[in-house]
Image (tube, rainbow, N blue to C red; front, side, top):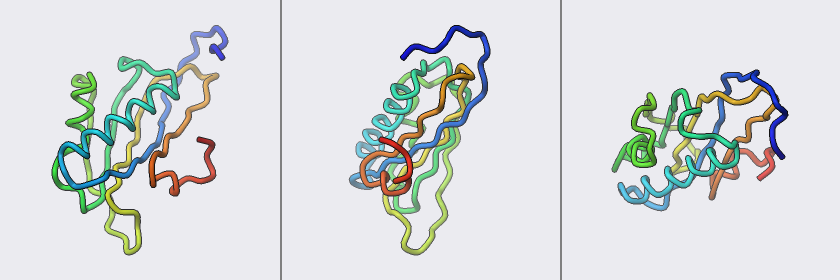
Length: 127
């Protein structure tokens, strides 16, 4: 459904997460690319709509930076930061999380994206 005509844009934050099959650069790249592509598609965003991105990954993912995958998707001019998720006992393993700051029409509701096993983190959200 198209957005109603308006020039009223807002800064929004969209959350997401995905699990990674293995601690390899290729697996981190593939999963991060899948996650970002889904965030862009589900929210009707263009690369130019993104203001900044914060990535976290669990302590068991050390083979590459999730931001490296984002740069390969065309986000090379976007400010990005990678950090390590807290090592909480029993927490999900091999998981990349993202917080995307973007400009969106005020009337559009952000759609958060949780993929693969990370879906378990937010069962309250529609797919």
